Image 1 (cartoon, helix red, strand yellow):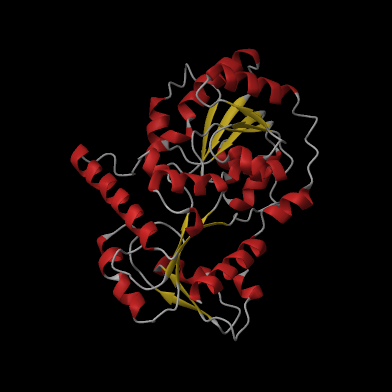
Image 2 (image 1 turned 120 degrees about the vertical axis):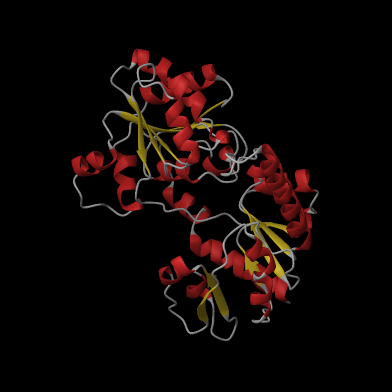
Length: 348
């Protein structure tokens, strides 16, 4: 979308990509150039070698789209902060390491997030909630932070594959409630599973499908689940985007019990694809989703159960959505336009 709105005269863009993703971007304009920058994320080489690599380009402005900014890079830069999840819920993938190394990683994260946000010429927050969290947790001045909402895939492309083929691929059985996302502890899936077992006593044929890449946290969750006691739980693994619309469409409802989100894509995607949503009332969720979903307290099993029952009972009615209004609020063209305006402001 930046390509669509930028003039040749205005900016020259260098897009730095890892080797395995270099072919994913195909520039359409002459003022957009991709560059291989094969530095591992969250690594020492990213901290010590990447900044020297960037300095060769003598950039007027660098936009880091995540918090892992090289501390040795001192040229003008903007940083996008999606959330402070690791600040509030530290859950590194290397939790299998000793407690000592875990604490070292946690300390390193806190040092990096504090220094990079302090050094940045401007910070883009993806929600008003994230902006407030940055001000409260890291004491960043309000004037330094701009809120720019992300875009959303409002309607996924239709898949020509048969429903049965897709469901067989992922082991999904209808009818089902759907959760889309990872299994980090703050996602609150343990409580969701406990509540679902109570829900299933009344609705014995209904399953709960948990979709997400089977990483360390999903593997741990799956190991803890007693299949005899926890019937109806289906771990589908990662669902390809081309299949995701079908999985959304065929669900009875989408549930999202997270304790913390900077934005929350899955319930928004479900909502705009016409599915009823039962969602946590924490952090950014009400800001992003508005009044068209039912909310619950994610730390109250009773509240979650009552919400699931209510949404399940009324699932056929459907919410009357103003898709044009949602499209206006969450679209990548608008995101690019606001971002380019920030580039101009900071560069000048």
